[in-house]
Image (tube, rainbow over all chains, first blue to last red):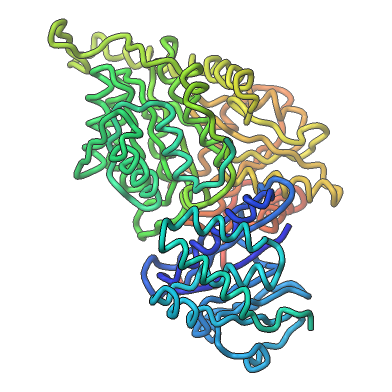
Length: 183
Length: 390
């Protein structure tokens, strides 16, 4: 089972990102579960969401304390939330930032992968909603879900032009990921 | 068709497949997505029935009461304060013998304000005459709603049913669900065939005044009817298994009961976490098992005894408390077990109030306190530092 914890702020689409991951994994023939843990329901407040992906059916519903993968949608959370807490040895931290993984000063037995998701979202969508870019970066960084499944799911969720633009975000992020090679 | 969707949308889909004719609800977290999805389905013409917008849960329940009295298949959903506001109408619906199904997205009650999951809301209306079913996962929610209408409308039962789903833990979880076709559901759930209804051509009075000379007997009969729903609930679950090939238990569902010396009893989504925890504990050499309480009302006391009588310990994990009265399900269990042999020890833990996350470790700690520490009734996971502040 792969366990993923997502950190973001209310309004950034963190919960949607977890749902899209589960949905894409399901589309890839796996079992999946996604659920949120809101602090307070308002824009800007720290939000967590969780996703489990497995070949067997998933029964456990507790939150994820020892993730294989952590996704951080907003670097301003770094001093506020212990985003690497419990991250498994050899795990992956995927962060939305324009900076290089080495510049972040995050040290531990995990690899740090970065993607300029906000920049990509502003360029393509004109709004700082980063979840579809993060999805593309997730596919590139982990290989746990195919980019094709992610594209199909984005199109299923967002119709027409919005769907095309969000697919473009995922594809662009897939190309721009930094640090995906094992350290 | 198997699809992945949010628990709330699974419920809305189930309500659509059940062909609810009157839906009336007021939005409240964490039930909101159910009502949003139903309003959308009604606006899109996917639901043939009427969606009645109201200003409160009291009115939502009242609309359902009126609709069912006129012979319509009625539906509502609520939680927490909304359920408390409905309480007066709930007792009336059961007393008037009006079959319908409500979904409760279980949430704590105020004060203090808290929007997260526990079972205090539905436990407070356990004496209302409604049948209460509790779902473990989203698939069971789909299947349970279909079963619930058939149980409610069965002429041998003819009572309303609350389907309970854990707020957020199920309402907001995306997971795969097998969605039956309309034809399959239609074949399993025939149209509502009312025993009586309000009709201007044939006027009757429902829920009228009854004095002391008869009220006593009316309540006796209502209690008998709730008790007599048991075999129908079992029969409907069995019929569902035959038709759809799925079975999540009837009144109860046992898991790893063979050779279990200590058996956990729980309701709702905690059962899923417990199944994995039981497997993990068995691997570590602890002879544990699990009994899912799928039906709280009518209370299957004798059936529970039959399922767990050979164990040494029974541990009831519950997300509610009767303030000043103790653990609700554990107390009912002790009452049901009194005078029955063999008599396992009954212990209980209040756990997960107001959305406190329940992990395998929390459950293992409860087990240690009961089996090794000899404790009986206690609250799990209390934080000493918070108690000090208080």
